[in-house]
Length: 248
Image 1 (cartoon, rainbow, N blue to C red):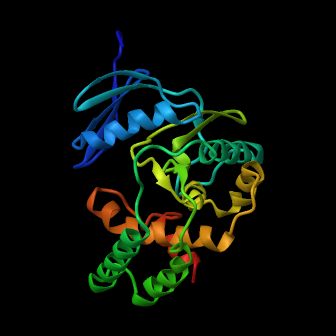
Image 2 (cartoon, one colour):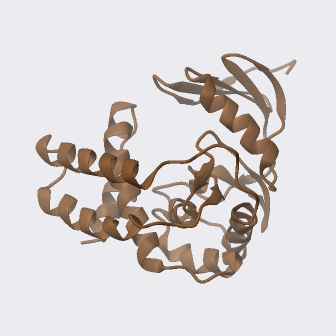
């Protein structure tokens, strides 16, 4: 890290901050349990992940992974269909791995949170009632029992890095847990629905497309309040509110 002339703030809000210093990422988290999960999940996942350089709570230092992100929410992806398929194949390897030794979100817990967020979105006037009601209806398909898989839990398109058409790293594992495999596929393609077919080519398994669409709605409904309260804009073009509008 000698000779570094600039520190980049990658993300910063009340819960955590991530800084880039040269080729090192410093993650500062108010909840060390999240960092515990991240470190253990990276050790267990059969995928390329960032190298842990050191940890001195509340700071975790990670090496940068090579390549560039598959895409960004709200921006068109310039990655090839083969790159998206490679991402799908990588996700399949994760889902086929042994489960991590800690539980994930419960179905009842997700349903309860969804009800609370939908009520808040309407009563606060953030979204029209018909938009919330329609997406709440779509989201219902995700609220069914699933076979647990090792899931990343926050597999945003910006968390998958590639060099050409080869996946070089998957980052940000603090939400990893046993969960619904289709949730990962939905988060990866959120706002990039046109690439779902390419992802499924690489994933190599039949999936219920209605459930993936349901997770698009559910993820967006749950995220809007948190994003708004932490300095992000879910109304930006191509982001969560547009995802909800597409279901209309």
